[in-house]
Amino acid sequence: MSTRSSSPFLASVRDAIRVRHYSLRTEQSYLAWVRRYILFHGKRHPKDMGADEVTAFLTYLAVDRRVSASTQNQALNALVFLYRHVLEREIDGIAAIRARRPQRIPVVLTQSEVKAVLRELSGIHWLVACLMYGSGLRLMETVRLRVQDLDFDHRAIVVRSGKGNKDRVVTLADELVQPLQRHLQSVRLVHEKDLADGFGAVALPFALARKYPDAERQWGWQYVFPSGNRSIDPYSGVERRHHFGEQSIQRAVKKAVFRAGIQKRASCHTFRHSFATHLLERGMDIRTVQEQLGHKDVRTTQIYTHVVQRGGACVLSPLAGVL
Image 1 (tube, rainbow, N blue to C red):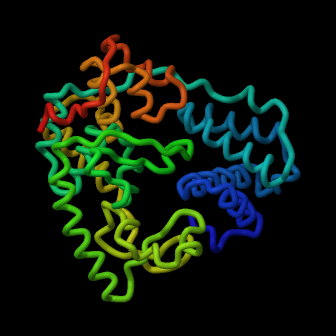
Image 2 (spheres, helix red, strand yellow; image 1 turned 120 degrees about the horizontal axis):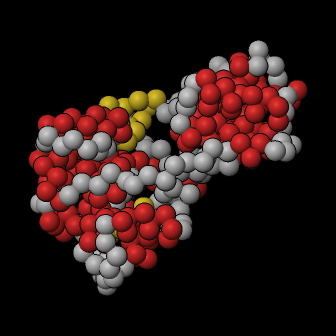
Image 3 (cartoon, helix red, strand yellow; image 1 turned 45 degrees about the vertical axis):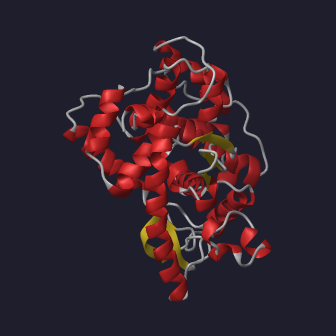
């Protein structure tokens, strides 16, 4: 949803979100929920509404629209943000209507199934899938990697501003060093061509572009997986090359799972689940797996102990078993 032509009120919501450095995805989601909330109540201004109207809207989503618990809670989070940070008032009682998310066992592929899926992928799709499985990365963490985040000497990847805006260091499989280096050679040629054409400035987080005016054109800040085409930056309006589209990878993985004849409901995130489970199968300590995944609480990681419950000592990527 575009915010440039939105109402002044929605623009103020957008500004409150950006001041707190929320992601663009969160911004788009919150704005969409606030807009739906306002339309649901006949375009009444949120300042004239409160807990009863919020409850009515969330009840409509759960009962009439039959949305999932996570979707209902996302709408609630958006409205809590609206009242707390934009209208500067708390709404009593709405926390009680937060939906309880069911605890589900994650879908996990065996190593032979991972191998079968990877065989059905090629190019960037294959490389991204290998990183998601070989390093336990989320899809967005993978496509947002910068060149300087890859540490080939120490076989490590620095994940910056992951979920919860936290940084962490994860393992880089030996088997991916040469494929990544070959990939970066072709990416560098594209970057040099962009520079020659008067472009080549990548979007930088926060105010780094003002603090380091030349950084946006430096090789280290470029995306490891840049888009095939330049586009207009939704924040600045500048034409630049964004990262590779996540939807393209999601579609490719879905087709690969089908072609591999796997009946499980596997997705990109399944590679991450499989990474954690296979590390535990190989004797990795659960605390180490927690650090690799970037989980805040070890109880989140314990969902994978339905497979094995053993200890371990070092981080060796499971990718070696399928390549």
